Amino acid sequence: MAEITMEKIISWAKRRGFVFQGSEIYGGLGGAYDFGPLGVELLNNIKAFWWKKVVQDREDYYGLDTAIFRHPRVWEASGHTTGFSDPMAECKNCNTRVRADKELIKIGVTADEKMSEEEIGKLFKENLGKIKCVKCGKSDFTDVRKFNLLIKSNYGDFTTKNTEPVYLPGEACQGIYLNYKNTLDSMHPKIPFGIAQIGKAFRNEISPRNFLFRCREFEQADTQYFIRPNENKDKYEEIKQERWKWHMDLGLSEKNLRWKQHENLVFYASDAWDIEYNFPTYGFDEIEGVHDRTDYDLTQHTKFSGVDLSYNEDGKKFIPWILETSMGVGRVFLAVISEAYVEEEVKDETRTVLKFPKHLAPIKVAILPLSKKDELSKPAREIFENLKDHFVCQYDETQSIGKRYRRQDEIGTPYCVTVDFDTLNDNAVTVRDRDTMKQERIDIKELLGYLQDRLK
Ligand code: ATP
Figure 1 (cartoon, rainbow, N blue to C red):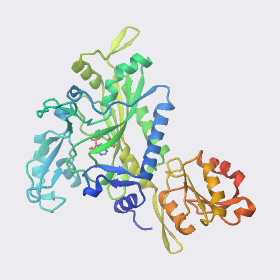
Figure 2: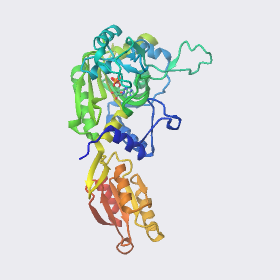
Figure 3: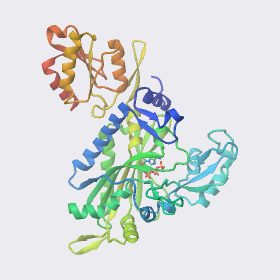
Figure 4: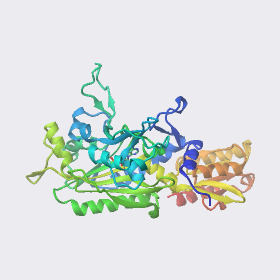
């Protein structure tokens, strides 16, 4: 079997309407991607699966959708205005900027963005000979300096000074802390409980790269679980297991997933683990973080806002501790397409087929009349009209049936329903299974039930 590379996946994603470079007709904008007509369906299916499992199926979770723009003090309280930075060095030959920690990791040196400027600068200098510029190959870099990742806006500012900028969110979850009290006062949850939301995040990444993996604009699906002080250990383990199971239920395979513990914790954190996925070409890298954050977040927001964010349990007041999960939706999307992309040799031809789990497939059923003639298009349209209330369907009558099957394989449609001249006599259609390519003759009256059984 041919090797599956990220290059192949990126080219397929564009060709088949899943993901496009942002602002492509203007030469592209680094770190921004657009989801195409089929990509948005897949993205929505992933988000809906998360929402169902994390919010709707749970009695102890509450959902939110909070504003993107937040008060400037939020980012002071969270520590982002001072501490949210990555270590950057610039190639003196071609001015390409690189992330010092990531370049060190590439050559096998342990480093991360939480190290101080001095610490990482020293490591970078010691290893300079081994680090090559990704663009020109030279090993001649400036000193490492920390670069803040928050992106500013001029929201509500009509001056030219912009002294107190309203930032774009560096992480989506701050909206949850801002509405912790509103959720308490309106829903009266009993501790322990969680709040969840899917929201946009923006980071001025030094070198956006690896397609959807490192963008400047992306989406995060976050939960914050509020617990009594010191009751973190068991619950943290439970949440880790729930998140692992979620990725498996989504359809990622266990062999491509692994846990990685953070070696370097921020001062308030008690523990932190990442779930990593084994991407083609890029290898294992983070798709979700699970963090044991103690009482840091609500203590900070109490201090900076002046509003008491403690929880009152039978007259006993305390600031809840927080267990956080934060998943990159775009990274999980990339994992899903990487997992599904398969090339098979069929009759001396390469068949590209996206073996999406059925619940995620953008189109569930394609209805394909063998000819465009009225005698076939009429019954085929009727079938399409009946099925579209139940599944996302596509009607396609262009090109040969073989080409249409291949096209549906390439977008991962689990079932193709072909209406042919025999249909006019036997009131039956041919249903073709994407994965086995087996075809079955099914009575039109039974078709809905047949598909419902298989697409449950
Ligand atoms: P990294 O070390 O890769 O920069 P991080 O540890 O800074 O990631 P978190 O702040 O924990 O990431 O964010 C939670 C999740 O958001 C990550 O697990 C990842 O899936 C996603 N994420 C973070 N940064 C980006 C980005 N630049 N582009 C796309 N997704 C991202």
